[in-house]
View 1: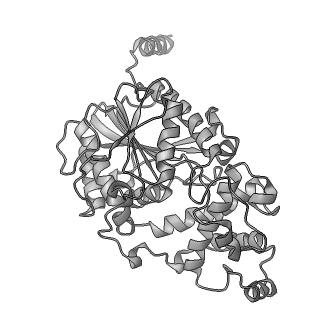
View 2: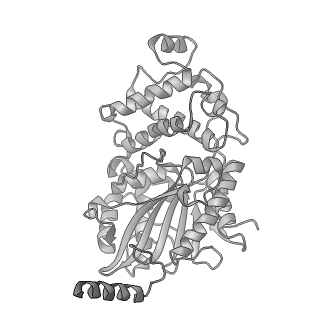
View 3: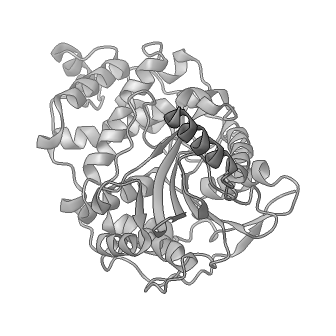
Length: 414
């Protein structure tokens, strides 16, 4: 009886405990959120004629020029914006950019600027929100890095580190590209002036394979028929399988802070400074937004995500999802309030390939969420802000520069 009464009292006390804004079951209240998100669905950066040397059959045609956001990509980002607004509001954060507490900074490439526009159309359709970005053609060091502390040797792929499973998947991609992968097939392909992936330098082959696999994945999420995205030789499961070559290429190239510092050190230093400023600290680097900013969205590239993973020792691969860096995929840095003080919690939110293909990210299962324990902070779900600042400082090294914050404001079309 005493045990039952004690249990009942505990249950009543729990029911009477107030819920803090931004707090959900098992999670700390979120004080500030920085979201690094990849741009939306784009066409391959090379034209079909330039890719022709890798496949026996013609590559599919796209509705836009190389490297640009597609109409389907725009619609999908509208859906992502609507979903993001609901998720932010559920976390006690501003669910739109109308009041100024949510800010967006995009890289200067046309696809990133278009992604900012499309995301804000879904997130804040009711107001003339703005985002910040340099004009197309002007590199932004926040996204492009400084190049300091990075060289070809550090950024390269060690052939010895390529697993047998990756080698088998690469042979599978060769089968998709040529319709065969035996020695006679490869010899004929070379005679026909085709570029083959097998039989040469494995590190170089994996880098090329990662790019080709991504182009096939993009055709799949664009909604093309199987006859186009894999020449009838791939199904959805096959797309998820070969895109792991893109994952592996990025993971191996960015496996260490030294390999990622030139690309991502500048961004990490300023993200950490943004969180630290909101926590009342005075960091060496410049924050990207005032302390009053509750949500900061950075619209970058898959390479930016991979560089952050390499700098912080993160691995969020999920065999059920396939792509580690899909269009609209995000790495999230939360400043949270814990009983022990302010801390940083890292997580990812990755759209599934099926949801991207459908262009609808509204369903709960359309985006896979995963909290990322930071090994350098003892592998715990949260890392005290002072400790995180130290980890970020060490990882970024001297590969950062003052952030002028002079990206011009660009009004969203209403």
